Amino acid sequence: MNALQEKARELLATKTVRVVIGYGPGSGGQARALFVREAAQARELIFDETCLQNLAVYLMKPDVRQLGKAALVARPATLRTLLQLAAENQLEENSLLALVPGADGVLSLSTFSALEAQVASQDNELSVAEKSELEKFAAMGLDARREFWQEQFSRCLKCYACRAACPLCYCTRCTVECNQPQWIPVPAHDLGNLEWNVMRAMHLAGRCTNCGDCSRACPVGIPLYLLNQKLILDVSANFNSRSGMTAKADHSLSTFKPDDPEDFIK
Amino acid sequence: MKGMETDKRSIQREALAELMAQWCSEGKRVLAPKRSGGKVDFDRVTSLSEVSFDHVQTVQSPKSAVFPRVEELFSFRSTDGRVEIRERNLDTLPETVVFGLRPCDAAAFAALEAIFNWDGPDRLFSARRARTTLVTVACSRADEFCFCTSVGGGPGAVTGSDILLTDLGQGGFLAEIASAKGRELLSAAGSLFGPAGDADKESRLAKLPAVFPPDAVAAALAGLFAEPAFWEEQSRRCVGCGACAYVCPTCACFDIQDEGGATGKRLRCWDSCGFGLFTLHTSGHNPRPLQSQRWRQRLMHKFSYMPERQGVLGCVGCGRCARACPVDMNILEHIRAIAEARP
Image (tube, rainbow over all chains, first blue to last red; front, side):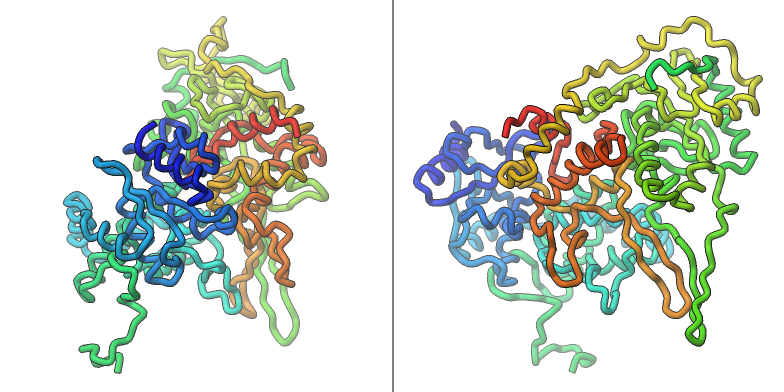
């Protein structure tokens, strides 16, 4: 047994947690979410470069919540997500164990300060490749960018895989499902698709922790991460704030400060 | 229709290109698999050179040819309490050739027909279907998600196709003419086809042994409906999106939306039983509040309700749902578990 499997086995055997949400082998050489509820099953856990999904998405699911206290195998983006969920009052302190596999064994974090310290110690910046792709887009000009996104969104099926895969899309009733009035057109036509995808990006501005699961989930391959990453940089530049760094409320786009330097808001 | 007599011909790649050019010049809409940005999907093409042949399966099914993801049913205008309805002019629907679909996809049209025409013909669907010709390309390869042979199909099965092409190598195809529409296409371009010769079709096809009998699945499902733990176990990682339903060649559920005010359109839009909202009643009651119940519904519908009510399986083994699933809900794995379950 490796350190992660051993840790999971111990947590389950001592009934410290009722379920360990981790990764197991899946189809096509990829990993899939694995819900380990028996100590003996802990040996099925894996952790390698195929383990990409942000498992925090399951913390919001009623079907998973009913299993009891959970330990969650966390990648760097997952840890940011946990802090962001905490900041949005969606995660109680000590209600969960975040398991972080590393070179020196497995860290087990449950307090917000421990999560914050771990996140502060890891690389949270956009990669050089990510930044250079965004710069390419910024240089494209408005018309070219509009054309690019129109083509991308024209393929959107409105299957809502992006929403379902996103741990921060936890609303029990999404704006698109509110129909009195109908804010966003339901049909997957050009207008409906534009409004849906732009609305979703804006709802995640200042909140998205760049896990990339929306893009990985999209069956038709729309590069949604470009929107989210652009907004991460914009929020960082304009508000000097970065989502997922702290468990304290620091909502760049939904907080009013009396000393806001902008006049239009007063 | 095993052993159905087909008229066998051959056609060379250059002649096939000419045939496609001919369809386009006649104003037909030709939809075919096209590679773009690392994915292969059906798109409108005007030349054979745009068509992908080397993929296993497209992301989406060809069902949008007959069941678009958004379709206007009619338009309306309300003036002084009088409502005027304007029906769609069915004559404007395009003559369509779906080219390069797989035998499983061609078989799926029977399931769509069974649903749309169950208790009365669906005008729009039927009109589109009548104008659609299926020129299928047999599978020389399969992947771990394919299971057509377990649900009555096969990599070279001709059922549902108007013409089935099998790549014989060296630019030659076997062309099996399998329906009246297929014969129409042949008679309009007979000179492009040659005699079939004695080509060995079987050796060109993917080898895909069947792994479960569909009857065993239906029988097992009957005993599993009231076993919530079984469905919770299967569906725990499902995140409840509609990717599986939307890429599925037989999923036919739709939602009705009105757009506009006094003047507007009534639209039919794809919907999915995987969504929490799908069965939410006006009262607030939801008979399927849990994802596990929605997953159960998906499998029951395809493998139990449809065979029972429409006499046709709701799954053709194309594997698209499993490939598209963001969390690897592998339907074949789950169906095998059901077939082997002893509740």
